[in-house]
Image 1 (spheres, rainbow, N blue to C red):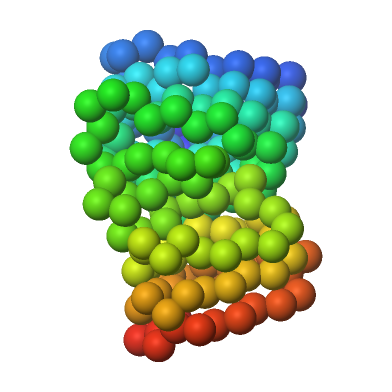
Image 2: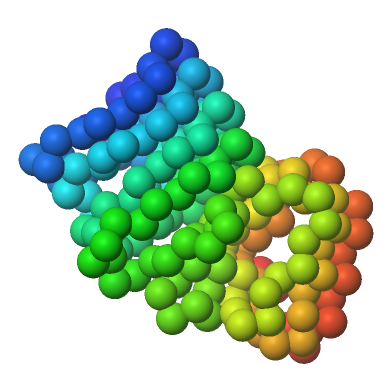
Length: 173
């Protein structure tokens, strides 16, 4: 599916792709304001940059077992995305309460529905690039075990008022 192919398709409500689809271009489904669910993304290995960004009514996504990479801002601006399912057999990602983590639990990859006061789980050590991008958090506590914060991890968090960094951060790009 080419880059931007369905961008701003405001009548698109649901996506189900056949297994024959192996690649989706960046921004392919961004700004699809009526999009509510993504049931099957075919046999892709990468969810590209801004793939579903600003699809503000997206509530449900199933991430295939074949996905190895979730690029930056893939789900940015999707505040209603609370039902994320990682297909059985995916060796790279897990989900907990609407947040996507690396399987080893060390990296918070994306948390599009985050809102209000957030305390980062003490079991992770990296907040991935654009992990909270465009979310509706108002405050964040970053515990001592966090060593890396990715590029634009808190970019465009328009409601963010308070940041409490308890960590000995090595990198803030």
